[in-house]
Image: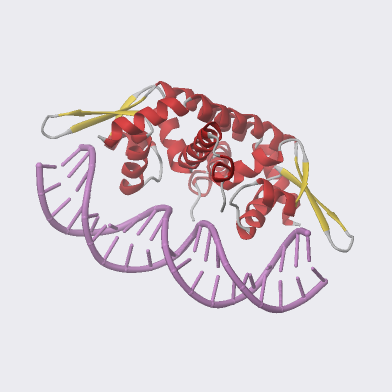
Length: 127
Length: 127
DNA sequence: CAGCATCCATAGGGATACTG
DNA sequence: CAGTATCCCTATGGATGCTG
């Protein structure tokens, strides 16, 4: 694929496209079932790994760690390690994380609001 | 599967749990990268299959059909077939679909708003 | 053109076991 | 308790070819 930069050499265009691809990457990270459920479960609480595991119904150990790492990497959750024995690790939403949470709330709200519509649609589709 | 209603005969509890599992199912359907990108791409336009394929960057034929069927089944998109030759199939967001779109817009807005934060977080995490 | 079916590779994701 | 690593299987998703 030939990029516009190769043709024109305009740095600002390159920056724009870099930002776009970054945005896409973040969108892909975040637009995923487990990530959103974790964010929703955290809310404005501070939870330990094991607590989170109980809160997010059906999540496996592996998926939880994996998504928590991803969220931490992107700065959506704060990971605080207490050097005690046994170890205690607590997770909290950061400011960007809490901002995203409001949109997750909106999706949840939407889901419940349209439950009826969707059930009807499914019956119609079944025919 | 044994339902609670069979055990206790409390219809209202059973209904609540059924609604919950339905909500979870819908959430899982919808909280997926391609579904959200398709909804965003549609916006308030009416697009043909092939147009949609061009709009949603990187989506494969298969994923597009698959997600469109799912969205149609849940009543988020309206699928209109014109019995011409060659065939012409157009997709439009329904009212519930448009309602969800506003929340997708919010996620996109969030993504761009926090691009900087996230980039910084990633650098810090890299260390 | 839209859609379905098929084949095939890979990544998603569960279970388990081991370390600090 | 939290995290990492391993095994292993299934589902996901891409590429291709066939039909109305």
